[in-house]
Each structure stands twice: as structure tokens, then as C-alpha cells.
Length: 545
Image (cartoon, rainbow, N blue to C red; front, side, top):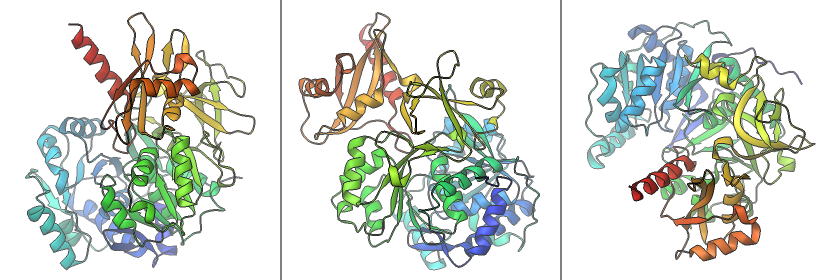
């Protein structure tokens, strides 16, 4: 089927707001913005940017917000003004913020007061000319706004002192803005979002995602799920941060384009608060990932929720273990579809068909998406053989911002993007991600993929989480080491080894086991193997000096 990708996010947004004006768009902390509200407020923000700043179409504007109502308002306002949105993690340190602001050349920053202190420390060392600060309750009704902002700042003391040379509150910006903004000519090939990622190599880089990239992926997802999504009727739970491309695409493009409703969860790490928010909500679609599913299922109140309205759970962002999938489906009685994607592919590459979700697979490539696996020399491999997964399609990024050399390393002249993931593709087109290329462990010439070992360990009833890495053995090879979080009394090293030996070939069995209270995770809950590996190597180096 031919899908029309020759649109912009601004056009998609305008059409949705017109078609679904009275439908609820986003709900957060018991307040809902309709599509008409979203249209009105984003237009007002666009008007402010045009009338009261020196920003011009094509300039970059950094958005550092959690999942609150302000996020879709300012993002679509910025896009309507012709700006490029730079999604910025609220958990960033001053050093990380400085790098992203300078690398992107951002001229404006929108930030939540609670986290503004870190940006304030480095703002003078950036090109940012205007800072717009918002408080948690700014888009709530007047009385609630005053009470909420007062409580956050003075009772809970969650707003550390900060100062920016040129700052204005979002409330004042919206109040002083002209009534109308001037529509800007935006082309599908223009960059819409700079999405920062470590990519397949080194330092964080900005993936240039054009309007066409993002609209294409939105249409691909909606087409693939056409028999599941009911326009204007679905109620999505949105716990993953909107500044992450997976969540952004699901909630700010796919769901929004067909008039569906999103329930924003500002802090999914607060499991009890998260569960309280879900109580009594007739949600039909749940978006999450492996570690979040596990954390929720350990909560006694979560397992008591009413899942009778739930029609589908979508899993992405990290590998879904078979044990977690089994328990989730058993609890919710709804299908769980695992998909696969990367920042550089806007992000979705493949999805498991709801009618035929296959354990261990990330599904079939989306419409107009080509996939293949290659060996270390770049030659295509036969079906069933493991190699590096390559993707070609309309959702593949233009390239890395200001990094043509890095772009050339991952996108060839024919448009194939090398993902850095090891995968197999079967005769029916189902893709299985074996592991990250850089995470593969070499045990005396034998390849060990951490995902496989982690999946086995996670089936043990007393193991909550497991991460597996390769540690140098001093002889040019590596050994397998497992980091484990237990649900009860700590297991013994011998018990873990014996359990693994029952299910794994000898060289895949962990040679070392370290028991932990928790595992380091990224902003979306993905376990950081590299941090565990680096920490262990440094520990060994100190012990030998």
C-alpha cells in the first residue's frame, strides 16, 4: 500500500485539532486539555515566540520537561513557529545540558522550575538567548494552579533556587502573546526534531528527524495497527518520557493524529503514585518496557487494578524477557506486542502483529521498510543467520547534526542504516534481536549474547532483574559476569550457576555473579550494561595497583 508521507507535523496537528476539537487530548494530574485547548494554547505560544523573541524559522529550541501538559503545548507551538525542537532530558547534569545546548546551537530553552538549577549553572556558557520557565501547575485552572505551585515550591520545597539572565514565565509568555500567530511555510524535508542519542558510536549526537521522517513513521504505525486503533476512542497510558522518541512517536504523533486520549504520568518511578493515578481509569492501551512492567507487577495495588478495558500493551526501548511477558499477559489478560526501533529510525522499524505475537521476536518490518542482516564485511546473510541488522525506509533520519563523518559511518550511499544490533530474520519476515553488537561477549572465540543469558536468569523465581556483561580475563578473551537483583534473601553463587547450567551451554554460564540492590538504568528504565562493565573493570584495575 502507498502511504502519503509528503506532509508536515504541523499539518497533521492542525487536521487532528480540527477533526477532534472536543475530544480529550492529554490528561495530567486530574486536568484535561482537549484538542481545541491544545490548538489554542500552542498557537498562543507560537505567537509569543514570533512577537517577543528573536527566534527565526530553523532555529533550535530546547525543551526540558517531564510528562506534563506543558510539553505538547510548547512542542507544537515551537513547530508551528517553524522552529526545530531539541528534546532534552530533565535528569541531565549541568555538563550534559551544556553539551546538548551548545552542540545543537539552541537559542531558547523551556524548562520546568523544579529542575532549572542545573541549566542555570551553565546557561552563560551557551548561545541561549531566552529562557522560558514553567511551574508544575501552570496549565491547570487558576485556583488549582496557585495551590499546586505553592505546595511544590514552599511546602514540599521541590524547587531549588536558580536564576537566568533572560527569563520569563510560561504563564506571562502566554498572557502577553498576540492573539494570532503568523503561519510559517514548513516543508516535509525540513528538520522537525533533533533527538540526541549515543547512536552506534561514542558521544551523544543529534539525530536529524525531519517532518517527513516522523510523519512517515506515524502513518506506518497507524497503518500497521489499523485493525486495533479506534480513532477517537483509545485511552493511552503514557509513563515513558515524551522527550524520548519512542514515547514521542506513540503519544505526540500516532495517538494524536487519530484523536486519541493520553494519560501523562510525570514520574513513573513513583510506583505508588503511578498506580493511584491509574485507579478507576478505563485505559485501553498501555505503553511500557520490561523494567517498568516488572516494577508495576511487584506492587500489590497494581495487580488489583481493573484491566477489563485494556486492549493492547506495547513494549519497546529494551529487550522484553519471556518471563515478564508471560506474567504481564497472565495478569492483564490482554495481548502484549513487542516492537523494535532506534532514535535514528524515528523510531519504529518493526512490530509484532497482535494476531500473531511471537515470543522472542520484535515482529515484522513496517510498510515500506526494508531490512537485511550483513556480516562483518557488509555482505548480506541468508535467512536465519545472525548478523548486523540494516534498515532502509522513509523513517530513517537525514543524518547526525553537524557530523557528516559519523553519518557516513552508519548510512551508506544506498540509504541503508546500520543499526549496531545483531539480529536474525526468518522466512516469514519475523525479526529477532540477538543483542547489541557492542555488547556481544567473546568467550575464547565463542559468541555469547547477554540477552539470551539474561532471559534465562530472569525465569528464576527469586531473581527480579539480571544484567550480563563481558569482563576481560587478562588473556585476550572475556568471561561472562551476571549482576543480579533478588526478590528475597540473596541467592548463592552456586545456586545461580546451577540454574544457568540447566538451560545454557557451559561457556554461556556466568563465571562471576554479583548481587546488587538495584541496577543502573537510563531515563526510560533501560539497564545500562556499559556502566556495570566500566565499573567492574575500574574496580579490578584498582585492586591490581
